[in-house]
Image (cartoon, rainbow, N blue to C red):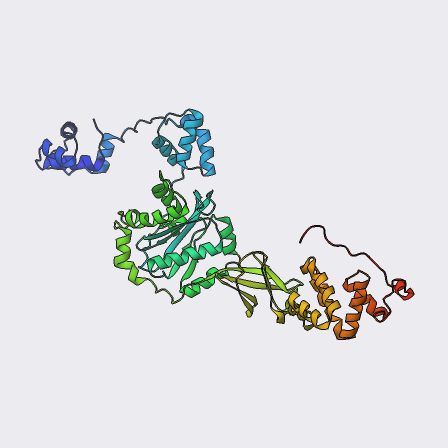
Length: 505
């Protein structure tokens, strides 16, 4: 006979004493007539059907019938693999992966459900109570970011590791999803900006997950590197609220947001490249994720967003936020800092100091503390130098103005010999010889154009068109000596051959 609870047996006895038939009792309580009949016979034997006696309590019935026999225990098909499963469980391996490994490596023939029930018995019972807090419309959004596998890069045609950004509005559960190729702070900020634009507004608070993306996590935890995100929050007027460590219940509305996208969007799908994936996931958000009956709200998220939350969001600012990154940079002896392989000048008074560089999409700003030092258009390629004359000392800045064209023009003014010697310097490796040409023409300020021209004539005569030869001639006062190869006075000046590079510059 089926053993029923004491409360149910009491109800059967009560109904029998009220004159209800066994058929009616079986129909109302959803048990067989045979079970009701047997309990009627037991009640008659004990005298419980007499209306003159008090209705027996559940405690009296338990004392009379005794506790029910324990249900039969069936050994799990996973039991022979208990040691291996416990080791996997301790490492946090997912149950689907456990089942796959058991089948592939251990000859297991049981179902995934058996593995799931076995693992659930290993888990400690959750005794702590939680209060579900519903947020008001427009009050909060929760963000998740993590790896999703590989997608093809349309620019190279090669597959690259991809990451998924998921931002979920806590009230409506409406989402924004985007796939990217890196974990940089610039990408993180760009995804936020595009999410706000897709919603047409900004939530008042962003709950940030305990990120597993190491590069991004390191950036957000650094006081300097996280500055762009904090400035973005001020620009859009939202608060950043970090999720407490190891408390996923504080962030349940988007917890495993990346897994949800993987299992419901990626599963069984193929994509041409990351652009195709992003186009299709936007449709999926609207047509599937946004149209489904949500398990908690029992409303379609997109409908709930449009009817209750869209109007409650903060308005978008007039201008979007563009700061992408903040870097610490050191000013080198050449009065430049290095950013992404390009060079930006600052005043020579900051040589050796560490500055902050704020990188925007099109510009770069250099700060010393709160003081803005310089603003540049962002370099278009590595190796590019952006230099300002006023950043050098006066005696050094003059060299910035003396370009190769300036040298040729002024050498022609001084005389044909000076012009010929200058052209000779600039003909081979002009960037290397530019300083020599600048120094050569600088001698005019101390000796005058006539003496400089005469010294150049003498240097060319002896086949040595070098700045050092011209300088030594002037120092020895030989520029006015007769041009005789056997002149004894010329013996004091070292002669040398002129060498040129065999290969082109």
